[in-house]
Length: 90
Image (cartoon, rainbow, N blue to C red):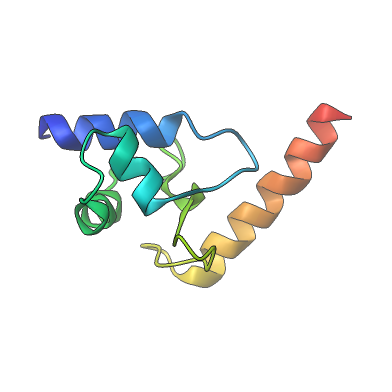
């Protein structure tokens, strides 16, 4: 794993349950604001997709974007997490 990939995964791990961030946000957080596509490629190869919640990363325009298991699965995970977050916060 490259140092940049480690930073990308660390940034993604900081996204709270039930929330999303953009590829651009992750790239900035990882130290390379213009590396949005690189972030996408790194997340596409995420070896632990439920532990490192790459499904919480969306396009800047809030459209869902890609996901290794399909955009339908990504939307399902996001919807489930939003509901879970609501339950946990009361």
